[in-house]
Amino acid sequence: MRSSSRSVYRTDFTQGERVTAYGWLALGAAFSALMSLVYLDAQVGSVPFPYPIVLAFLFNLVLTRTALLWTDRRWVALLPVVCWVLVLFLLVFGVSMFGEVFFADEIRALVLVLSGLIGGLFPALRSQ
Image (tube, rainbow, N blue to C red):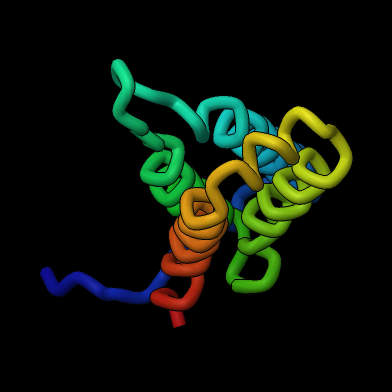
């Protein structure tokens, strides 16, 4: 049996199920953005330990791969990542506490955003 590298998406669902699935994916992305900001300045003892950077990459990777199960359109599969970025920036620029955490270490913040974007874009670009 020969395996194919082409993406396979489900077709045995209703439009309502698809909308519900993307709603849950967007909610997961929003929660991930919130938790990434809450724990961005985490430390082990006195050593900075920004594990949300790795988790943002992995979680957005999973969100996009899951979204690709529900559609064959890559731009639709990127909706959870777009939600993650929007919620991240809404929290940073809308809630002063998160803005202070985000801008306290610009390198860490930039790496968080890039990590989340790369993790979310990788499955969609790979599925071409």
